[in-house]
Length: 327
Length: 304
Image: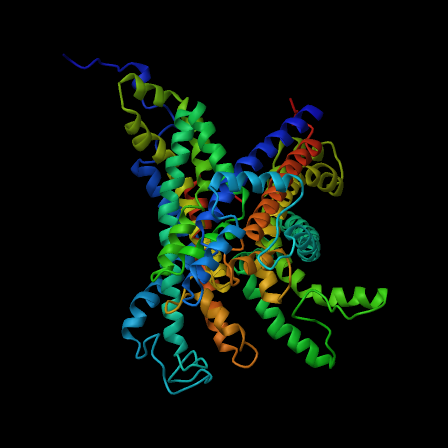
């Protein structure tokens, strides 16, 4: 196990290193940060040259990559075009994104397992068909459509009906709140709808997967044997079948978790959250575009998260499934 | 020279081997597909949506760019989907947006299927160093969320006049990874089978083996994947346009229409409802078709 882990982590670091170069190239070709300056007739060539030097664009590409990489290894992601250090800003925004993604993943996983098990056990019943239809609907709906439905229709109705602002539709919290309980309530009120949107579109695919996996296992010989031994259906289902059917589902969930962090930008935009995704969008659409350090740092963090969760998925798989031997 | 009475066993078509292209199996698959109620519903809806988006704009009295004297009016006989605050007829806008979304998604599916099949074929057939190169490359493409790469790229490229074409091409060069792995796996399994050995023995060229034997055997998986790519591309393309980095004005797609309608969604809900409903309907229809195709074409898929 230790040997496997070391090799897996080393391979991950190597992949990240190769990825860092490709990402650097990608950002370099994606736009000229000086384009806005150069398009302005009132800016003199001297100013442009000064800006070019300040951004380090007068140096060759490989040298720029090297200095970016080495300073990143010391934890320095550089400064954004507004002069703020990128690293600390990104860290704070990652927390904001996690405030949305972690509850959504937990809720979606619970919902998916419940729905998947019920659908598989009651296969072809009215309940199964209904759950399947609902899952298909959410699976085919973009997250921002769910978000708009929730914030412009559900939230407005709920808030009008109660006469209070129960559900907030903009922002991740109200910075003016004081007191532990109030802060907690405020965060929940702000987080409820984004989490619900992400949960609904995420659970749909997972529940189908859970259903298929459980049906597969229920057809296996060892389940027939367990039944033949006279074990109670409940014991067969929960102890023998579900445990094995959960293994691939857990793996998929841990891989999707990383994807959700990268994809949270859409939900963040819909609800006006200042998370990671907004940081990337601002870096891409701001006055100096692309804000090279911001975009590169974002991509490196997300790449590291994806690689990390792929390793976690491998480890989980190996721990849960005794048939997998890590040689 | 007379033919030997009994051909050597190695030249016999092995039982259960390469019959994906044979008429009997194709007909059976088609029958299974046409009996699949959900898939047929999906197919009917999809065909209707395509017809609406292609023929509709030619017949409808308003052009999608035309500005009428009705501002933000609710659906009526004259404007069945209402008008937006600028005075556009929403029915014309939704038809045009649907056309852009469908066109882009179909383009993405076509190109990414070719790329994924080729890369998977080379990796799976040649194996060894080629396999290593192709699959490590695939891993790299998988590391960064597609949406992020698209955001960075479209910052530069989507500002073009024909933005939907660029968005489509960008999506196509990113969405082939799953198919490449699928084709690779199929090819690796088939490569060692006797009928491929027999082809080698009679001196068939590599490309003949790949095109005539291996790809037909992977055709089911490829077709199913292509269909699901259409649905996936519609979702991602809409998200990109919603963020303002996809299709650019004067072009419209369903994502950009939803984004435009979002601000007034509470007061003028039809600006949101109609494009959103058509987007979900189209993706749902494609997913149903894909499901039916999987049940019909994939011999390894079980009855669930």
